[in-house]
Length: 173
Image (cartoon, rainbow, N blue to C red):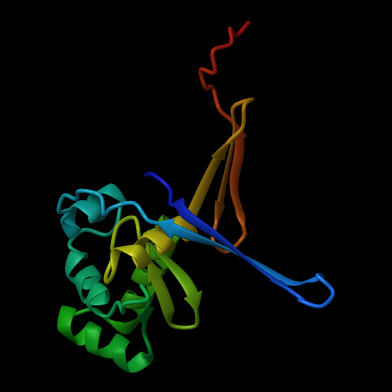
């Protein structure tokens, strides 16, 4: 995915006319975001298989995603959970277990009590610019010249750091 880039820089300097001293300076960058990438429909049954979710759980995932707001969050209080359970024929505890599975597999992230964020690399709702920001914040991957890969999340946690066998133009012994 290409990253945002600076297209305009402006600088404003305020000076005191009597003394000639600079009283304030401000710098501003204007960014452009990449265009929305082409997409292919990915059916919930496929997400179910790719992430090893319980068989026939896609109707539950669909009901959960219907609750996603334009900030990319799903707010689930006990009433909403009961309504979803009634629609899909789940018991309350089964839904709670399913939500835990979604979090463990990285399909959702638990943001707070009863608040979940679906992985923005899989699901998005709203303006592309906001989805792009959510994607950028979800996961960062950095590579060093020595081939070390550092993966971190928007929560500031280091997920993984390990040496990769990358072809960096050097011969290995």
